[in-house]
Image (cartoon, rainbow, N blue to C red):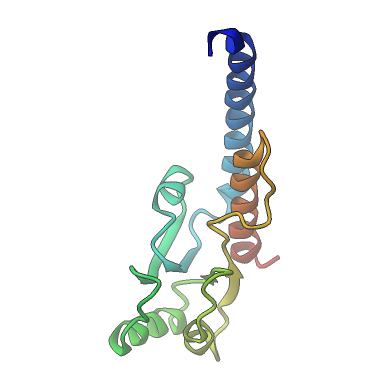
Length: 145
């Protein structure tokens, strides 16, 4: 599409600028909660967590279609009781009762992470909106907001 080169180049420049600005904003936003432990429903956030220096305590399952076993739930429950995690994250598409059961009777907060960005409409800024939303979801639960 050589006829659209100028428009494509401008769109790329806009995206790169917005992404760099969003990255800086998220780094500052998540800095105060970097050392707070948490559990996620499944291990889908590794790159995001490493990039922003977050401290996941662990995840419930590798495959969200398979519920974790009793031994795994006991390990997670022990860590929650020992206050090694301040938050447990579920996801809108997987709302397992197991998270509620394991967190019951502890001081741990429950949050929701939306790895699909289900409420973000498609636009040229969808990706940076998705990153901003995800970081706000982490921050809200880890800070206790």
